[in-house]
Length: 421
Image 1 (cartoon, rainbow, N blue to C red):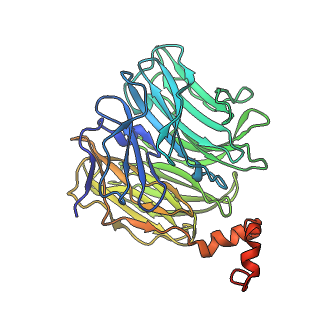
Image 2: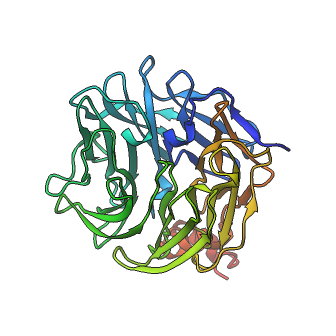
Image 3: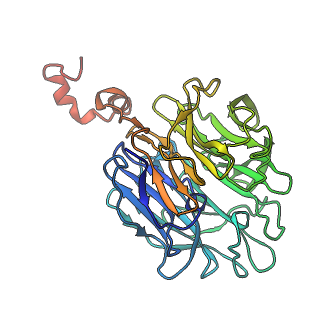
């Protein structure tokens, strides 16, 4: 089977218009988010392991231009059993950032809310001028980071809301997230939940465009402030997203995937493992001395801790590449070697997303990617990796017993000892 077309007429560069755009809720069911050719934000759904996909379903307001979108699934946050995908996007028509949810239990869209209104007209003139990121903290609050250039300067910020009563307000009143305000030079950000002593806090991978460097920042909810805690070299000179971040639920370790001097001479894709917010516990090269790769997307199998990193590589940087991946089973200390993923000939592929996180319900490592020249949105089922759901008789049953969830089954356990033994 060749690469599968999700949609053949999406907006050019759809992948880089959707941060963490692929969500798998089971091994069969997945949702891909992006911007369609009609400038509306949409999602496409599969129920057969990515072999067939629905037509795009619009989540943004009709007749309003969606520039870029970011999503976060409840179960990507540790101990969250929710079923909602949180969606944030930038609307160029009304010059604002909006938010709503998609409940995957019944595919119902929630009410649309305004996160932030720009002071001027939002500029849509390139990847470096606008972005949005979103996550939910372990305590439940929704966090949105949005950066855009309006008529004259940078606009946006960090906003949060209580999930029970949606109303977004500035979260970083005592210490701002964004540092640079040069026109057409917006710093890029990715949020993840981060328990640094309280479950209300979050962490950000911060790409400082003024010095081509990535740093880490932690947000203290009690202090309403961001603090920079460390980072490393990331010279992303061509403005393609060659970085990612995600955390492992079992131990709170998190990994940053980043490149140096992408597309220029000898370049590396590097995995940085952090066991706390300030210390890099290990630095391991995934791809060494290769000037043809671009992009990076990380997926963590939360069941066993395995890491998957998808990226583009080929014969000519940017114009003749295809999606590939590597896997690590030992915390990123070593990587298993490059594995082919896309089956079509090398082309101008961009916008690669691997799915972020798979938990006990199972899912897939099945990246989606875009063909920039002809605006195809693609995936591949043959070379995907299915991650089965945890059996009820295994970890889920043990968790229920530990939590007292079988208290109501005492009669069954007491008759014949079927559950007791």
